[in-house]
Figure 1 (tube, rainbow, N blue to C red):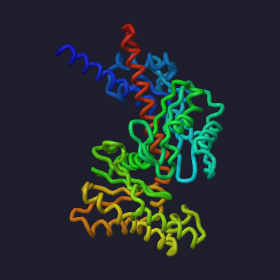
Figure 2: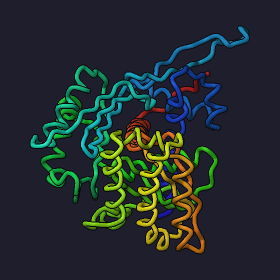
Figure 3: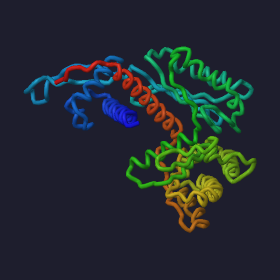
Figure 4: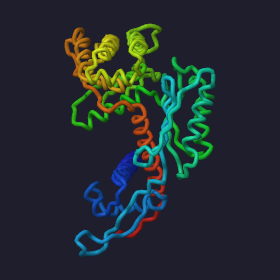
Length: 388
């Protein structure tokens, strides 16, 4: 038992050290010296050298030498990450559109294509067509992909989608995955709920800014409303993937908010995003629409707030462009029913939170996969001499 425990502990340390090295090297595209990595990671030269040799062997980095900045002393051992090793692909099946984005290993979007969905044409056919056009000509070694959908996702499959019922058919997801797998049979592809992806991105963004957000209820709205619950940094999925789902009732405050938006679009003759932007710039007609929407959404959140007692309500998506007046409405509606009302924060620059959250997950999964590959190879690698 003790030997097994020790082996497990050593394996965990090796995996953690490998992830540290991978994250440090791929922090940006610039070359990094071995001596710098020692300072950045706190790991020893032998530990770093073993992992870096393996990364070089599988084409993740190139190894060379460079003169010290002072021009004095021995050449530095330098490593440069290779952006062409793999790419990341995100497919967002939205309310009435599909967007496909491809990014490099650093998560920087290289190209993107968006197309409105056409009624009467199979969803899988339309999504696959956009995907094929976008990834045509990509020549990377492998691809990691995330498919973001409106609906309940559990154990890798779509259980229910009110907006796109076809997604509940496994054949639809397989048809969407097919263009990627035909080029990269070993590609890592995962399906995720769009609102949960947005919530995770909004949470990480808020945490990175220094805000103490604690237990978070994240609300994302573009045309429709989505919610995600973040507890101790982890998205709450629930027993069946339905945690945070607010659209299953046939008629509720969230549907009322959506109707208010469409009424405003028709009355003002403006697009969704234009209404949100104009409200943020103080336009009274646009603010009337967003205030009515925010009142409905906040009212609909009341039972969730009372049940969870969150520290923070994050409001994001294109709706967040409406600004301070939006935040004021949320605070008022929630404080009316809560003795311990959470703070309400707007999530800036979250118009593409679903896509960005999906890209974030794609990066994490791909790096996890690379770490697993490197750790596996390390177990079979002979001990090498120390690199200077």
